[in-house]
Image (cartoon, rainbow, N blue to C red):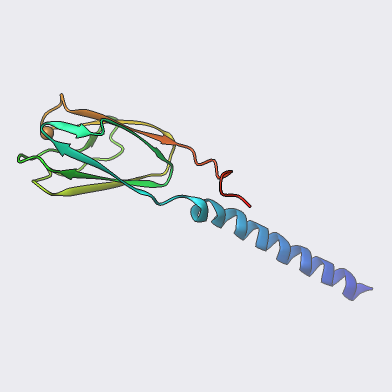
Length: 124
Ligand SMILES: [Cu+2]
């Protein structure tokens, strides 16, 4: 009898551990790592507004012939001065609206809107 109880405990512990592992690893595994690009050209970010899912890496590429930066209004991210064809990437993990601008030309603005991953579409 005692062995049966022990076995149940072992099973329960193993199950709990497995569940915990599943719960912890699930968000990372389900997060879409879609790369999305924003181009900088002619003193503008294109697209100006971009909506992505949480976990998305956004890459800015300076296709203009003068330097620009990608600077978060709330200091969430900040690139160095990007020369022509330089790139800057940032991975958005937290849903929200991220406004940014070019610190060299503050009239250049853009925004990344990060949506929560629903996960419902691909489940099962
Ligand atoms: Cu600029």
